Image (tube, rainbow, N blue to C red; front, side, top):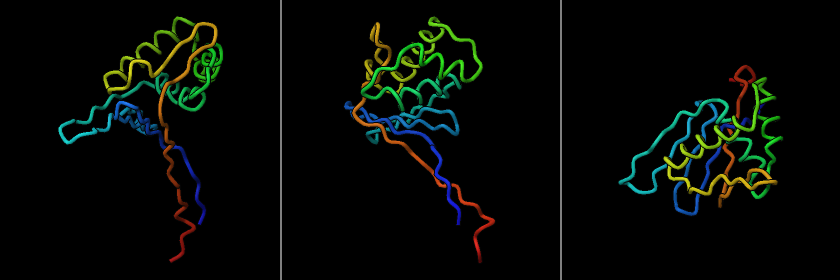
Length: 138
C-alpha cells in the first residue's frame, strides 16, 4: 500500500494556555477552547495571509526572516505584486486576527534591520497520510 504524508496544518501552543489550529485545507484558523466555558472561534484567512503565517511558522520560529525573503517567497512566488507596505498591511491584519483568537500580542515580532520572527512555546506540524485505494487488496 502506497502512503504519502501531506501537511494538513499546525497546532500553535501558547504560554497563555490557548491553542490555535491552522487548517491548510479549509484556510481556517481555529482557537481551540481551553475550558468548557470557552467557545471555539474560527477565522477564514485569505490565501496570502495563510501563506505568510505558514512561512513564518516554518522559517521564523527562533529565527529572523527578512522582509525581502517574505516578499520573494510569499508574494513573488505566487506571482503577486509585492511591496513593503503590502507586507506591513497583511502582517498587521494577520496579527489582529490572531489576537482575536487569543494569541499573545507579541506572537509576530518585527525587528528593524533583522526582519520578522515568531514568539511561541510550541508549534506542532499536523500530517495526514493519503492512501492509494487502488492498491488495497481484498
